[in-house]
Image (cartoon, rainbow, N blue to C red; front, side, top):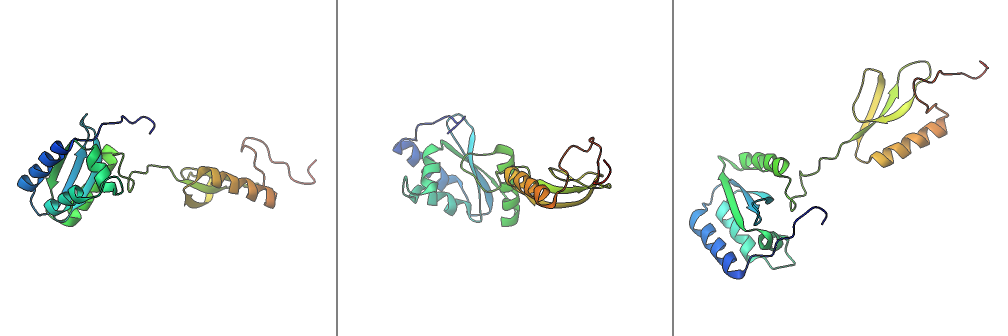
Length: 178
């Protein structure tokens, strides 16, 4: 758990107090909810069609087998914002996952850059990997998720096809030119 602060789980009495608060205050309507740790950092963002019912499922989950129970054990507070529809709640969830980058959310939390296989213009075109299309590119293929695998594929293509893989600033010398 690189760079993450470990927080002691909530005592059972605090979990019960949190459950009572959810029962008393949460309504059964669409919402986006956030769970925060003892430092106030958001550790999970979720959406619900029926907020009260969804939040109460966390209190019935088996610890440590169920992910929901593990999230709740790390949470010290639950916050929520009602939404006009389930779709609006879904959009709000995605926005907040990007904003807070919570440790327990995986979907929508990946900000990996994609990579393209690019073919350049000119008398001796090059095949190379890049992250965005430029004016020099005739064609771009992708996007691909793994930079390492894409670079390996580009090297293999260059070797198999006998295509130059040197920098564009190096003058091209064709067979028979000396």
